[in-house]
Length: 452
Image 1 (tube, rainbow, N blue to C red):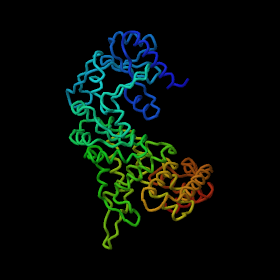
Image 2 (cartoon, rainbow, N blue to C red):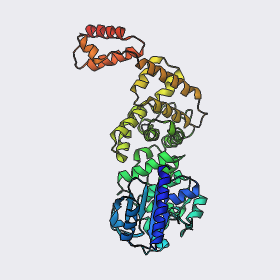
Image 3 (cartoon, one colour):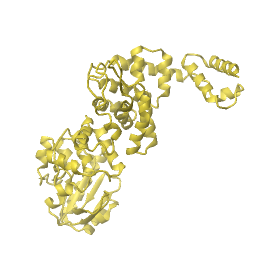
Image 4 (cartoon, helix red, strand yellow):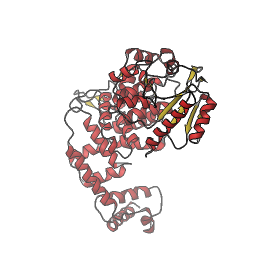
């Protein structure tokens, strides 16, 4: 029995014990929603009605080791499981932060009263795990079938500004249309007080779970809520591109096509999240580099370099993960080179040096593929990736050969100093040009003597 099956069995056991104690356990949230869609949901949430918190705790102790997840709010977990057990509660917003809620547990609440605090109608459904009965107080099943994202209640929905981003990511993941009244309510909500961690979590869900993550950003633009957390990305809207190479339109249109193309490749990526963020932010530099030349041509010379400060600013607005920031910046810096070198059928030295600069050559190849696929001019040329894969194997073979090291230079009489790093880089370039280690070392030493 796998972990998910164990969690389901545990939920059934709790439901039986709750029933025997005079209460009722209901599956709520994603488990119900995804069950109707035929999707697997590994997180199981139970909501317990009709028994006191102390009695519920006693039942849980009988079936496992209780983990405190918010006992004062009536929320418990069980060790070594993805099972959350909660009691129905009332919530009242008392401040601007997501933690500023007055919460009171009330096991006597009706299903309708308890589910009113849920965000969307399809997340407000409940199912009795023992009988299979579906309790749907707000028309969630019909909305789910129609792929419509509709909020439950104006007042309770507006109390949590994160729901703006949840609406966008659910629209992307479920390929759903946001109801006009929900869209209008989201436009009126102030999202500036949200923690970046919560926004980043919703972004990650859209990037890693949606077939078309572009829907997330299009929804945010329609709500007028890209400006708070994605201003560098929004600045790409309306930035023109040369129609000869980009018939799809402006930079934002191209970027969102690239993101959707990347979503089809992310399972092949070494670091799916970093890869998707690189696809999202690879062309930010075009917002400052784009120019219309006297002859009418549209250019964006150097955008891959000019965009690095913008890329960092955008990333630091949503995350403080330095390794992730470094990865995305490196990918954005190099994103043009694979396709350019493949088109020119460049010499091996150039592709070796390109891969040597990359923090993840495998993902760089995939990014170049996504970039080329986001142009709407022609199908992707599979020969390009084949060429790059062959050159990556060549780079790996070359990297296995003996190479001049810093210690080799010291042993040969060079001393660390201002030019030491450049000498070592020169040795590396000679290695990629095909020189064996002894020959490369001799040439570096000869150049060093000549420069004295």
